[in-house]
Length: 241
Image 1: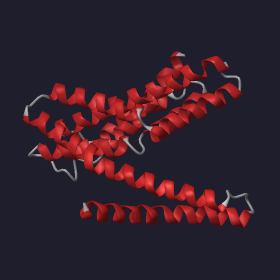
Image 2: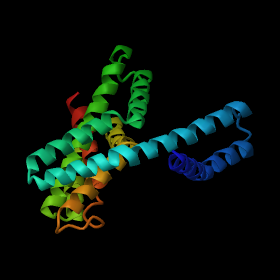
Image 3: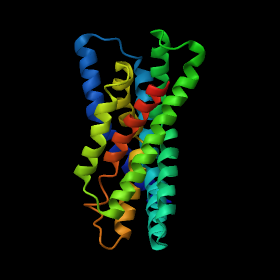
Image 4: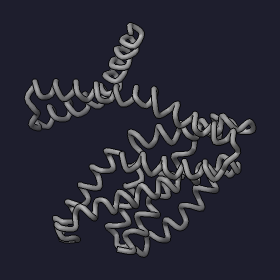
């Protein structure tokens, strides 16, 4: 119990230290520009909630999702089942992305902006936001599965990224400009608090379980394909709408 409390207090201090530069920049510009600030009590309360929330998320990932992802990848490699490994990658990538709070917030903001600029009707906003989230989640899932194949087959990461960039650039020229600019942002917004740590843990666990692979060289690079495939899916979704 004491060890757990010490770990928690250390994690709280680390989170506070991590957020301090961002807080100083925002407060510094707010004072310099004379921007309105929340009440001191609300500011302190919000800061405390932010530090606590970040700490709990990080510790939760370390204690549950990291070891689970690495353990399942290692177990599937031990059974020699590439099909099950790809299915796990697809469902993990999709589930982690759909649950991503940053993606939900961005999709909601995009839907409200589309309504405000008369691109869609207000009654369509919820379906539009969900369609955007599902297209992005499908892209992340396919990107994670592609990253798994890269590690297993030993593909070159730069060549894979070039192969993804070419159709992405071509497709971006045949869709409306708002959809093209939006598509490039969706992959970044999806790969945030939950998706990136889980995807990286899966890659490290997989590479570590393959005797001929390096966890450092082959395990990382999972996030790169997962960033480029979602824009392709969002572009295709926008083109078909």
